[in-house]
Image (cartoon, rainbow, N blue to C red; front, side):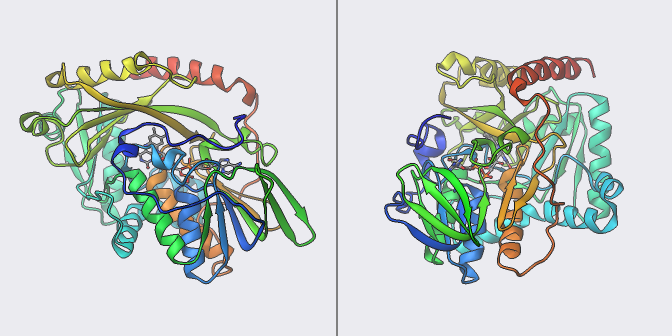
Length: 429
Ligand SMILES: Cc1cc2nc3c(=O)[nH]c(=O)nc-3n(C[C@H](O)[C@H](O)[C@H](O)COP(=O)(O)OP(=O)(O)OC[C@H]3O[C@@H](n4cnc5c(N)ncnc54)[C@H](O)[C@@H]3O)c2cc1C
């Protein structure tokens, strides 16, 4: 990214319907803080909120306005858990670490809805569950395992057969599904703005349009310099830049694949069509490798998202693949006009787990949510605040070195080849 500060929010359904934003003017004068945070998405703002509530002086800087990144553009699905199921986490990380990860990820949706309620954020929050359907019998067996494992931990899961899934989703493409009642839906940009307003009320400083262009350690403190030349000096720094990570810290960008995810939203559907697609108000993302995710918004528009090509989209035809998916899944929606199209960057990690790094004294990084950051960043942001405030020694996920993905410069090729390969597997299995 070679612009000094990011432009305004991209046009999207969320930008058109969100709560007004609290003022977050650019950093005009140099400032001091205990903790400086780079990135005003969920990770940065949740961490800032909890730190400010604990009496820590915190300053958040973003190259755009709060929510400019994925937090203001996502599908608004609040889904707990990780790509891995509880038994896989225990087998890989052992009892103590595995349980800590399961608790942080499994309880993440609870945290989102509790925080929204505590702060009174008006963000169309609703909690009707997540349907994860499968198009292949192999995938369906995996979902049955997933449901069994969470059920053993007290989650009131449901399993749906083909007729039931067709009724609940409104599409005959799926063989079956599991339903996770912990999940739900929100207006993602309103959630960001509510978090920003709450962090400001708690005493945090937040500055939009203040790209951090240099990060240097001087004595016991860090100095962050913005594109406009103002500085923040702080004892601790958190980089919370996820899929929009630039070259501020050498090698960090190369730990991630920043893949594009595209979304389309229809015009508000007439009542009979609203009743034909997800009439129970659940959110849905399927179990394909190249998954499709969809839900209705509060005004009855159907949103559908999925992977897109690597370059930034320029014209409506760049979303044509999603329009084909929409009418393929839901033939009843043929001819319904598309009102909004937008995209954003999802941060994928090589091991599909979020990453925490602490490569220098007082410097932390938290990123790589693999498309699950609404809930996970809310949970891990709170854990990060406790760690930075000295209230908790450990973090639920392992702290790992900054490790570049080999041949990262070829990520466009990886993604292109990976998408073609996954498309083939999705078609065959
Ligand atoms: C299209 C799309 C759909 C998605 N759907 C879902 C979903 O339904 N459910 C779900 O759980 N997750 C979803 N995700 C993922 C989720 O949105 C992210 O995991 C989450 O928002 C990450 O939050 P964050 O705060 O870590 O990063 P972001 O919200 O991306 O924020 C990073 C910020 O860092 C700033 N920044 C970067 N470099 C600098 C710098 N040098 N100086 C200052 N600022 C800087 C950027 O401007 C940006 O605002 C989706 C993502 C996309 C793109």
